[in-house]
Image 1 (cartoon, rainbow, N blue to C red):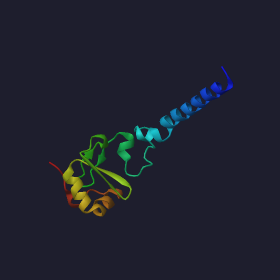
Image 2 (cartoon, rainbow, N blue to C red):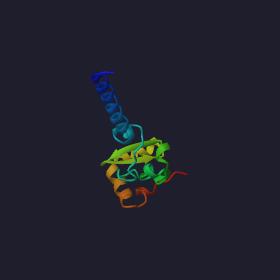
Image 3 (cartoon, rainbow, N blue to C red):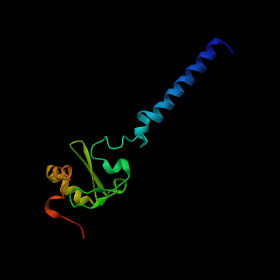
Image 4 (cartoon, rainbow, N blue to C red):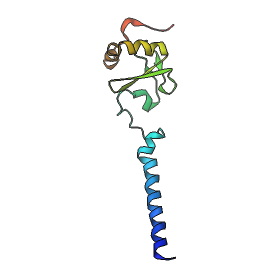
Amino acid sequence: MDTETIKSVVSILVWGAFFLLMMRFGCGAHIMGGHRHHGSHGGDEGAGTGGPIKDPVCGMDVDPSKAAAASVYAGRTHYFCSASCRDKFEKEPHRYAAATAAGQPPPGGQHHG
């Protein structure tokens, strides 16, 4: 092999290794759903741990991976048991988000039967 061929092969291997590392640990990991920061994304408490979180409107436990709806407010993702709860939240997000952040029960005592 001549020198130019060796340089080309080494260059391809270096770029391939760089691509592999970026897909595994960098931006590609975020795209593929990996590389969790375990709670550093405010509001995704249940999403990082796999545990249920409270619907801010009705107070039901919701599994983020199976939530019927979600909404982002003030940089925080909120998960809902139904689209109607999400719609109520989106009409008055400050009302429900404030109670959720304070750890209080949902305003209005709305619960599903």
